[in-house]
Image: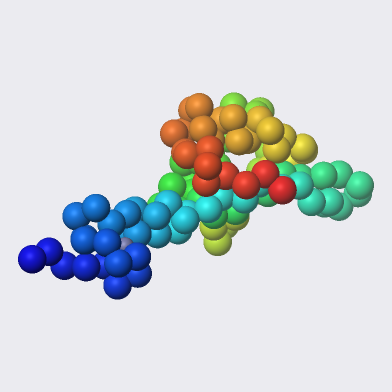
Length: 102
Ligand SMILES: [Zn+2]
């Protein structure tokens, strides 16, 4: 007799709840905000802490812009929302379904 998942009621072998939980865990949000002096910046939220430095460096290098990262948030100078998503997916292997461009 196999165990039944309490969440969806399916046997554990075919249940995908834990997979779905994992996928929704790291939702990445990309949006712009106004910085000082009428400038804008692009903010990337939701990158796992252990990947933050690597992702921030890659984005700064590829986009050739300045930026900072701390506490799970990357801030890049300028407006690069679409390009950030493209780089996250094509160069860094993130799942496009987990990236929200706001
Ligand atoms: Zn389940």
